[in-house]
Length: 337
Image (cartoon, rainbow, N blue to C red; front, side, top):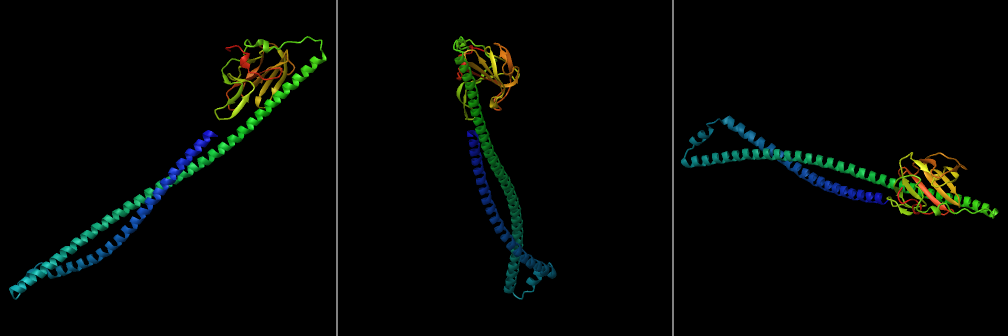
C-alpha cells in the first residue's frame, strides 16, 4: 500500500504537469488564433487596396499605350511659350512620379500579401502542431488517470487480499493451537488416569541445540513478530526453511503422527506427537508420505517441500511446541544445518 501510494502521488504530479502543459498550449492557441485574425484582416485590406491600385494602374497603362511612346515629346513641343513648356514638363514629371509610386505600391502590396499568406500558412502549421501536442497531452493525461485508477484499484484489491490472508493465517494458527491443546489435554487426562505409569521427559527440551534439521536451507522468516517487505506484520509460530520444491522433509524425533492432511493456509501439514507431550509441525508440503496414527522414527521422510504461501518461495514451515506451547526452533536445532 505504501509503494502504491507513492506511485499514485507520482502519477498525480505527472498529471499536474500535463495539465499545466495543456493550459500553456491553450494560451498559445489563443495567441495564434488572435494573430491569425489580425493577419487575415490585414490581408483582406491589402487585397482590396491592391485590387483598386491594379485597376488604376491598368487604366494608366491603357492610356499610355493609346498615346504612343512619343506623346510626351509632342506635348512639350506643342507649347506656345517657354513658361508653358516648363509647366507641361512639370506636369509630365508629376505624372511619371505618380505612376512610379503606383507601381511601387502595387509591388509592396503584392509582397505584403505574399508575406501575410506565408504567415497564415505558418500559423496554420503552428495551430496544427499545437493541436497535435495538445491531443498527445490529453491522451497522456487520460493514460495517467487510467493508470492511477488501476493503481488505486490494485492497492485496494491487494489490501483486501492481504487482510483476508492475514485473517485466514490468524484463524489457522488459532485452529492449530486449539488442535494441539486438545491433543495435549487428552494426553494429560490419559496420564492422570494412570498415575502409576512412568513419566517420560520432554523429548524436545533435552535435545536443545543438538536437534537435526528437518530440511537443509536458509531461513526466510524467523520465529516471532516479523514485518514483511509489503509492510504487513505477521507473527510466526515457527520458522521458514527455504528448499527446492520436492526436497525430502525428515522427522526431527520419533513419535506418532496425529495430523497428516490439508490444514488451511499451512497447506499440506504433518503434526507429530513426541514422548513427553512435545509436538513438531511440518507445513507447506507438496506431498505427504505418512498417515494419521502412523509411528515415525527420527530422520524418517514424512513428506516433501512445497509452496503454500503465494508470496513466498518453496519452503518448509517448521514449528516446535513442547507441552503445546510454540517456541523458537532455532534454540533447539544444531548451529548449522
